[in-house]
Length: 338
Image (tube, rainbow, N blue to C red; front, side, top):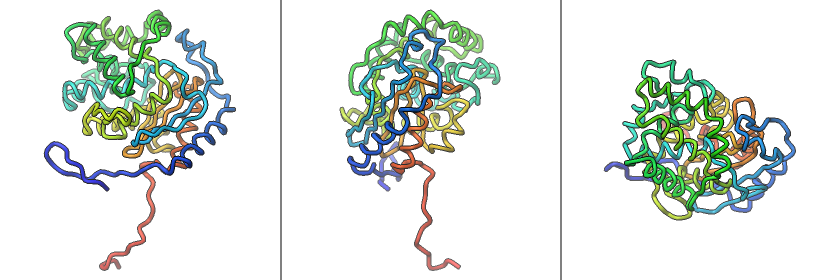
């Protein structure tokens, strides 16, 4: 346990470290070899640009809070970030407007519904959902500070790039493909606006959300971005304090409850860590104080989560000793024990 100071007080946080570099690299390679032959899952064919992905693509990257990274497979191949942008944008908005205001405006409870469900808005009087589903992510985007859409985009692009430790660029082909098939999100934005849960023009919010989902990343980028959340908001390579430790705590809490949509309970039961998935096949898993792992494999299950990504996360969570709920019986017996 390590003492830390936050908001003028002191507290204690759990810390730890990954196994030795040789052990981590060996397990990453073992996971890739073990799951590369898995053929279950389907591509996200409702977005034409994503339907062109190779089902055989599969990369893994693990990042430690020291900045060390470990890879296997297609870890350096770029793909669009998609829904994996959601926790990072939520973090940036929390930092900009305050985490309590963001919670009140967006909601943080799991919907138990698919990521693109309009019922997530309609089921509550306030129209709240959470920042990990499309409705909540579009509402989050509408809270981005800036005097106009161009300034808001600069905030998003710069902020997500700070998490990655390098400048991220938009895949224009993916952006145009999603624009052409955006009727569902446009309907969600209209419903949010009707509930007075949108803080910008609906068309602007949708365009900014669509553009951020088209940012190109690699598995290594995602591992470092997720590791920033594991590292109290400090980017492990650049050393920049991207967000405050308190914001990390809030973001990881929402990832635990809603990061994998209606299967978040199953994920937590099996992996025991905050996680998030994206329809391009990316997946991140955060081990607070230790590091993070990311994978990319386009075939998805029915809930829109990477099949190989989930298998990889469970394998590495177990073998790297990451599950937050693992414990061992104490050998100490107090003097007043019966």
